[in-house]
Length: 179
Image (cartoon, rainbow, N blue to C red):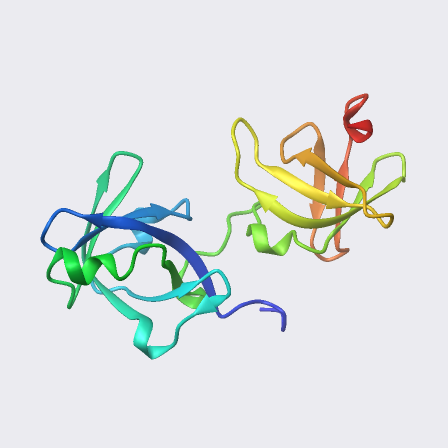
């Protein structure tokens, strides 16, 4: 693991309390929710800026799919009043308990700061943020002059992601970079 890699990764966001027995509706931020939200898994609660420390430690008692998310019951949260305190909380898991990305996959946080170049050699800018959207996730790319562009994170536009060289190689369709 590189020195800049975080020790924990966001795996879910609590949106609201559900019912009267302490369950929380969690929007998963992982493709492996069934592997992450397992009985006994210790997660940390925090905000967009990171974890809240020991006071924010939660242990999964049970989890089940519900609509497009999960209903999760954590140990020690026995009623709706206790559950409501966690609304808006991000849930973080230690990186070392998560499955690594599959071949050809990356964590989105690894894209931030990468240079974006066209296959013709034009430097487009640097990835500032990744937005999860439909039909395709978007790279927010900021040029040196401050111009912001959005590049769909999909083939055939994104030809290569090279973490070692610190770049994303794109083949933009006509007009994409003029938007």
